[in-house]
Length: 462
Ligand SMILES: Nc1ncnc2c1ncn2[C@@H]1O[C@H](COP(=O)(O)OP(=O)(O)OP(=O)(O)O)[C@@H](O)[C@H]1O
Ligand SMILES: [Mg+2]
Ligand SMILES: [Zn+2]
Picture 1 (cartoon, rainbow, N blue to C red):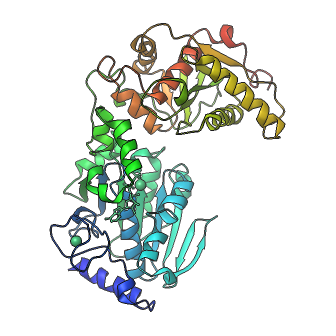
Picture 2 (picture 1 turned 90 degrees about the horizontal axis):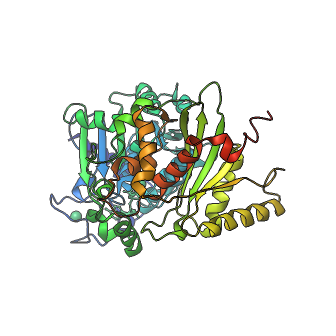
């Protein structure tokens, strides 16, 4: 069995690092049915059957679609470590949504390749790790190189024996995947392992459709890995996703096709999606913030969306949303404002709006005082007055999507998930944070922009 041969080579190689066998943290056990918890000679948690080494069969792509925290990254790292140690001199590509993801998660992370090698007592297999270049060398001549899906052009050219793509559904440019597959042409059987939560993107749908042909699909749910997740992590997942449609994707790895009743479909977003900013530039850019702390929603994330306009069209430029402390979200929004040379910061004035404005102003001044900002006048801060219901506010923006006038530059995965799965009147009263931020930004831009916020601060003077 081919899988066995690789395993033997790996274990033989690991043994050569002179560690007692007992120090190894073998990944795979031989039971067909195993929950991955300690049993028999296993004193530690190990792979469940769905996570075990690459499945047998003639596949070219192993697609591991699973819920948040299921052990997707760990599975990819185990596979790549095993392959790289067991096959001297191979070239492997590690591609994350960003270079930082590839470096910090796929190589250095708690589930990354280095942690895996360490668990095997095989860290001596590492000859060098250049974290600025993202290159990991093994003593047997194997090389792993980190790439970013944000920079597809860097993937043009290099050839590989094997590639690992993490969070493929969240890649900004589908091109990057094409480049990965073009570059897979070394050795007898170049292969890719793809790990991630499923998202309703063209790419994921196409790969799933190839199931049984050249693609082997494995699925898993968050709860399968509950034994290995911190209680706080599980609590966060439950709070964020339970009872939502998105939870079926994020926790149970269901590939959600169009949501009945959602205001916007992925097909609308795909149809208007562009790769680059318009050549003519943009008339205006705003950064909208929907802070987690100022409202009552369950979510613990702050929505921060950068949106631009050119004539009658809108361009979603960047989603900087995330989980931030109170002054961190303001810094994040201000940094986006400076980087994108935006015309205004936008927020919704209803709930705790004064606090939002105040936090932005105070943070701006503090950043100025610390020399963290270029020499700019204080930003214009625009309030959106949200007097009507959530649905009424989102509908005109949904209409722009329907008309093909709201373009996404590349993909903004989490924002798109929220907009395409939120159903007014069915989901929680509150709409999700990223979507809200997008709606505020688009509202300001779509309404008579120049009247509301004046001419472009940078653009008009440039
Ligand atoms: N079979 C296992 N035995 C022990 N620990 C495991 C196992 N599988 C995963 N883990 C651990 O569970 C945690 C979550 O795994 P991992 O980061 O791979 O999940 P993920 O699905 O990539 O999560 P995310 O959705 O956040 O990207 C990590 O600490 C990982 O080392
Ligand atoms: Mg992961
Ligand atoms: Zn077992």
